[in-house]
Length: 68
Image (cartoon, rainbow, N blue to C red):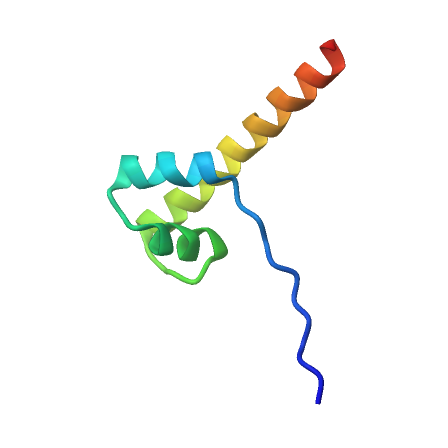
């Protein structure tokens, strides 16, 4: 019997901590919101904000790599 192999998603920890401080929720709730396991206005806002911050972080890293 083999176990299903699912890829574990890595999230940007700095963004998670910032969202925890901003909204006052625990890490588990923030992660569940990002994955889409929670419904409501706040989880949707958290998910959109995480995606925007993640894109900005990746853009900043790519910009610095090209400047080096």
